[in-house]
Amino acid sequence: MFTSCSFTVSKQNGNTSSKIVWMHCLLEGVNNRLRKQGNLEMLVFWKARLVLLAVPKTGTTALEEALLPHADSAILNPPMQKHCTVRRYRAQLQKFFEQRGQRKLELMAVVREPVGWLSSWYRYRARDAIKGTPNSTADVSFDEFVEAWLRDDPPDFARVGRQSRFVSDAHGQMGVDHLIRHDRLEAAVAFLE
Image 1 (cartoon, one colour):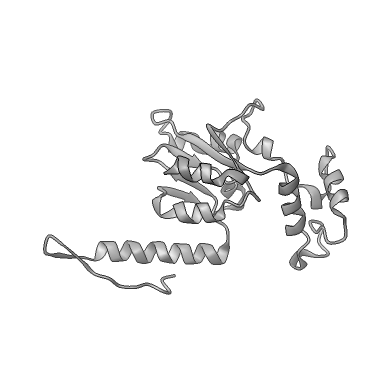
Image 2: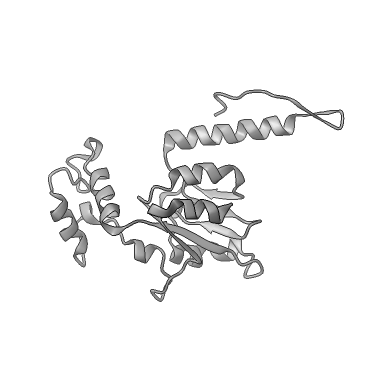
């Protein structure tokens, strides 16, 4: 896990502090693992009272990787939890992180323009690694993919969910406190700063 770790020892009040070195190595190891894995998802900033939900295919991986060292918790797995929707957060995690209502956390998410979002899913599912599987879009056009996605019961290759559902509560209302557009990530950075 600690593949490329530089050991720099610092002095604090005359005592050698290895704690800083250890944390640097730990975070570097986590970041290296995540870069290989490519799946950093929900981040919780308990002290700042903020949860960053990761809507799939919104290009927030770089933002999430930059924020990981500052997060108090990160949900990486299991797969159903790492892309935690507002509904799932409210039903399964809110009581835990918010100490049964004593420490409310705000939710933040990034969403993408719908055609660009669907195009990203289409390309992702057209990759050679899944060609020939029910999820593959290799043998369908983008128009066919979108038409299938619009159905009430889409086939496997078009079953990618809806961003609107991801960020809405159990009543279909907006469930996040801070919703940022994918093409305005600088607004997310400014908010987080």
